[in-house]
Length: 259
Image (cartoon, rainbow, N blue to C red; front, top):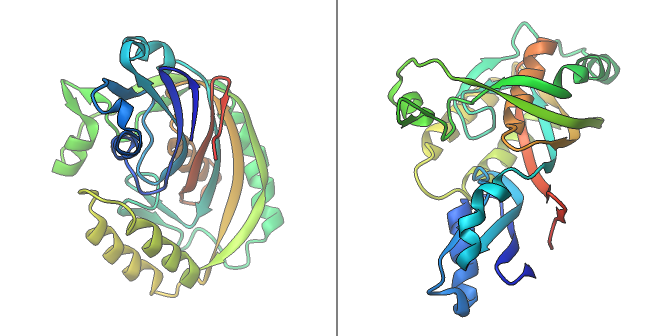
């Protein structure tokens, strides 16, 4: 934890926390901020860890300026499933049965990934995830999604300066399930955790796929880019369902990650 300026604070949001929980935890440990107005600039999903920018006092009036800063993330993509949230905290929407062969080699998948990276660099249109806070007709998209109502998700232009691919590893179905159980249980509040865990238990006990590929990336992108959206879309281009397995924000503007 580190104070960069008097009214600008960088904290490391832990996986499982909401940004508000991280902010309030900081406030409780730093009593001089108890009565000071505070906000965070740039939210992070509960399962995303990393850099969170907190504004205090008069600096809160400058929030829009900070929201527009560029971002950097380390993230991994798991191939084999796609979900309605584009990450592990969602209902399975697609699975790799009949799509991903068990004899698919690492080299084959690496080739497919490298060929498709060009579609996710530069400026392009990205749809807002249905499980996001983007409003349509005054209502957040995630509320429509939870109610099962069909609504067209709007697109917006995003900018990706670079998307680097670092390689592939494998994870067994058993390890994948253990990972999901451990991480989802960290999340508080109503994010359908019990329902999601039941679905994952059912899916990963089928034994139709014994292992999964996980690819590692680093991205430099403009404000408003949904990394989990890129994780989902990459699988769509390759022809294998995919999701964001983990995401860590490492930089906001010129501010780097704190320990």
